[in-house]
Length: 319
Image 1 (cartoon, rainbow, N blue to C red):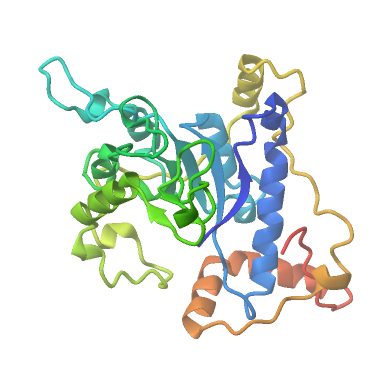
Image 2: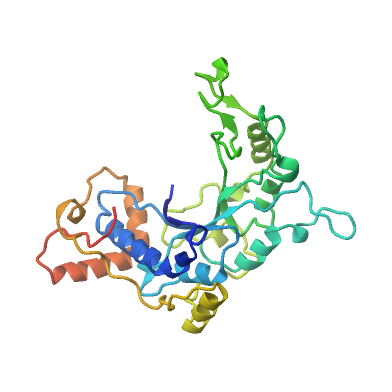
């Protein structure tokens, strides 16, 4: 389970490039709210999702610690639809990962230290194109690359096939009740060929049993304890003002680069419903995991509250 703080900011409007400080500020405020309310709620990781491979400058910016660790997203998502052929052949006629569109992703993220997720994937063009009654369709040949070393095995932390319910874009894996005029579809769901093809791929490829029992709730646990890493994974480094300025110029953005400073927490969050925590029962293990990840945030919030009037103020823009 993850919360998406923003999705494809630059697709519909080029001004989205100038709005990324707002994404980091929202991430900061939610993280701090989660830290203060850690006794009553599960800490759900925060994700940004980008179209296709995205910009390396944006990746580094959203995952780096600008003010502190609170403004860095916990994971980075890619909405990827570029794998549109059964095979990508090299000069010898053999299927070769390095000739596939995922090789670019491999090169960009092989040293990345945060989880990478295909928040959407599944090309439905070319050989995978289908239409009503949706016979055939996608065969998901890219799934195997998610599990192989020196491909995406060490890089990718998960992948979500888009999408379950059929819509006019024809990406669906099932005809949900009422999608067609067929009377038999009124109250029934029909699973399509693409669904069963995906099921077959997921059954054929799985993670190593060495990941079973991984102590993910422990503060010191690292993936390298389950499997030797092939690459060194480094923390993200915030891009320089020169790099940001260059990117703005390349994208034709007339707005002055503004990534060096984040917007403040919105006013109005220190009273009313936003000033208190929603109270839920949380297991001891999840409480431990939450405090494990956010000790620094808790320390900062406690320090801030000690100088205030002592009220249970979240100091957050979102719950």
